[in-house]
Length: 341
Ligand code: KG4
Ligand code: ZN
Image (tube, rainbow, N blue to C red; front, side, top):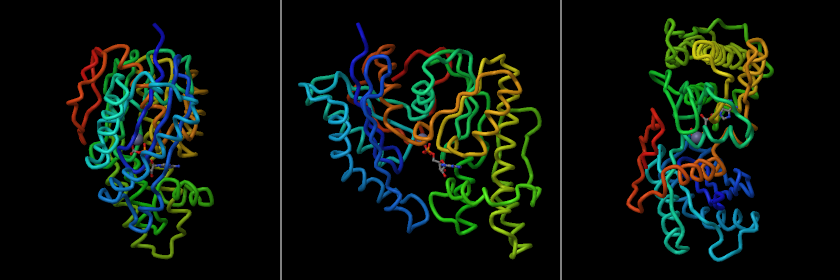
C-alpha cells in the first residue's frame, strides 16, 4: 500500500506552518507564515503572543496548503501529522489540538511528530538518496546535537550542548550588538563585511568529546566589546561566527571519521548560516564524504518536514493516540528505532 497524502502542521515556536506531502515524500505544498513582525519589537519570541498568533494564522495557512496541493477530496488527505514537542507549550497546543480535531472530523489517522526528528527528515526531502550511516549536525534555536543516524528512526546521540544552543548564542550576541531579532540571520549578514580574524575568541573544544559549550564564547564577546567599545561590529560578528562554525565543523568532522559515516548532514535553523554551509561543503570535499546541506527553506522550521516524518512514523508505528499530549521538553527517541508514540 502506498503512503497516504499527509497534512503536516508545525506550531512549536514562531512559525505557523502547514504542508502536504504525498507518496514518495513528494512535497505537494509547504506554507510558512512567519511571526517575525509580531516579536521583533520585543527582541525575541514572546510565548503568549506566539500562541495567539498561531490561533489566528493556522486556519488560513492550512487552507492555503491544501489548496496549493490540490487536496480537495473528501477527506482531503489520508492522515494528519503535527509537532507534539519540543517547543513552547501554548504554541504546540494550538497545532496539536487542531490536528486532532481535523483527524476526527475527516476520520483519518493522527500522528504526533517530534520536532527534532522533523529536522532530520528535512534533509531527506532535499536528498532522497541518502546513504547510512550519517552524522547529522542539528543546530537550532533550542538544540545543538551531533546525531549518528544508522537508518530511518535509528538515532544515537553523540554529543550536545552543555549550555546555550548555537542558535541561542547567535540570538544573544545579536541582541548584545544591537542587531535585532532574529539574531542569526542578522549576524550572518553583518559578518559578511567584517574581518573574522580581528578577535581571537575562545573555541570550547571540550577535549575529544562531542559535547559543545557556547556560553563562554558569548561572555568573551561581551567582555571584548566592553574593553573596546569602538570595536567594529562587523569584525566582532565575523570573529564570533568564525568561532562558532570552527567548533561545530571540527567536532562534526571528527564524528564522521570516528563512526565511518558516509556523509555529514546539516539540519536546523543555524544550518542556514552561510559560513557554516560553506565550511561543511569544503570539509566534506576534503574528507571525501557526502555533504548534505539542505535548502534554506528546509533548514528553518516548516511543516513539510513534519508531514514527512509523520508519514514514516505512521507506516512504522501506526497512528498516535488522540490522548497524546504536547511535551515542551520532548527528547529525540534514541536507540533501535521502535516508534514510541
Ligand atoms: O530550527 P529553527 O528555525 O527553530 C528552532 O527549532 O529553534 O532555528 C532558529 C534558530 C534561531 O536561533 C536563529 O537565529 C538561527 O536558527 N538562524 C541562524 C541563521 N538563520 C537562522 N543562525 C545563524 N545564521 C543564520 N543565517
Ligand atoms: Zn526547529
